[in-house]
Amino acid sequence: MKRSFLSRCMAIAIFVLPLLIAGDAFAQRNADPSLNKELPLTELLKLPGRLLSEVKAARPSGDLKLTGYRVEEVRLPRTQSIELRGQQVAVDKAWRVTVHGGPFPVRALPAVIWIDDQIVGNGIENESLSQITAITFDESLIKDGGVVSLSYGENKEGRVKLSQRLQLKRGGEN
Image: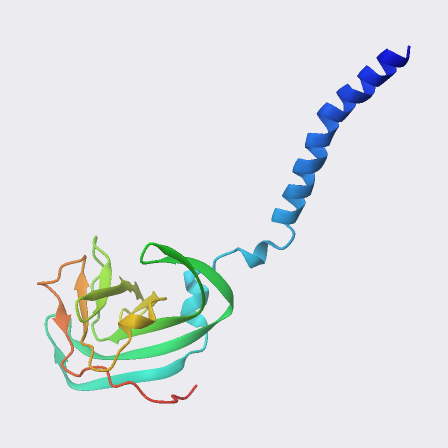
């Protein structure tokens, strides 16, 4: 009798204990989903930014009729874990690069914004197709003297460059 009672207790423990442990782990993982949730790109596009550099050209450049750019530093509402150059890093800022001109054509290949020979990111067109914006978490791309350009696809040779180089404002304004 004692033996069967112990066997039953052991059987219950073997089946119930893993469920309790898994339930606790599930509750911890889902306690605050906003902590691990990435900010949607649409939210990054709307956040206020600190102006770092802005240029308005007197004449449009190239086939895409580029008329200027704007570079802003955006403080994130919460720290994000992202992959940057193959490493997981925690970031609390992003940089938003917007190219003005157009109207930009909507194509099969994405619009790509560059600074010098480095890709900032794939661009998102605004509703009037007069601006294309890309977001980067790589601060090393944002440097004085950089050349902002735009291509469709990762076509280095087909880029249209703006003649005015980045001139970063010290202290910037909101």
